[in-house]
Length: 481
Image (cartoon, rainbow, N blue to C red; front, side, top):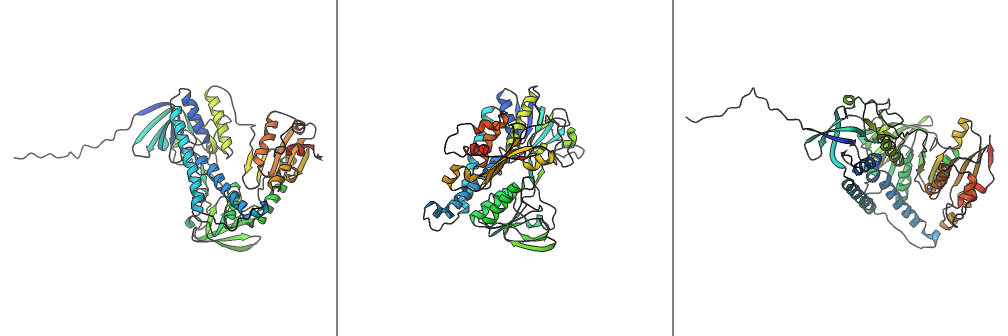
């Protein structure tokens, strides 16, 4: 008689949980601060694991700072072609090859990612591709991108999970499949009419770039003026720039509904100056702010608390509410700049080494990469007035900087606030060519506690843009008590 085998229905198949692997440091995310923390501590001999679900190196080299500036520079070259006659060059007509513009950007990103991979390898940090979440205090479960699960436990855990573009709850907006900055960087066509919802840095930089590529561009913003947190003269200068370049600005407006599909045809119904208004375009870019990537991380299992806005609650040392857990960069509520995330790395690095370092009181320089640029460090006039600080204002047009005349880039101005009772520089703003580079010179003087007279009396190379600071600080100031 032939024997038969039968399965026992009472026997359950038991899945074996992967073993817990112990590390000195486990990091979620490979953004600016996180990757430098991984490279630095691994090179010092610490066992470091860093988990990344998509963009190796974080947003900056892949989908944000560097790719956007790459596209912006292509747009500046296009603007030079349109101004060729101004420079004595007869160039004739030209066309924009957006696939080639995109490929230039992609080639740069590929090279940057390769650099990051080499840095992870050379430092000894273990790069793990997958999505991580807490399953217990200081213990991360990683769903690997190529399948499988790993459990990592760190003596310390750092959360560098970043933020994403916010899609406001406007009826029809999500269904319209709008562009964010990510998809805009991947466009292979020049939009016929690009509508940009949001007049912040991302919106303004893309507005000018796409206009220079040939798009009709409309910017919609809820504020009554551009850059509302900055001085009125700066806002007026940027407003005039955009109008001169043919960019439509619809300010003090609120969008009530959206219909259509971005990339085909899209319509926005809005309230503007007390009346209804309809704007139709081919593409819609949403640039209305950022949302922290703090959902679905199992934070409650680790005792990590969030702020009311959804950011990880940290102290001035970037420690979260759970022992051994830290947060870095935008997810920690730090100012949304790559250079601030890098300084967050320094803060956590030093505190892990037993050196007290905090985020309070640090300088936050910024630059809007329009053409010309708007850059700022320290106090602006609006802040000084609110705080009741007396100051002397030095202000000159960019045309007073002779280098700008050689470049045919005389638009804008620069100004500095100097303490009324001393020669200490309180702040500096510039709307002008290479504004970010010029600002850095003043920032170094502020960091060194140098009086403004040190720049005024310095010997700077002629003709350079930085030399214009001598002109600025040699001008007659106005007192604002």
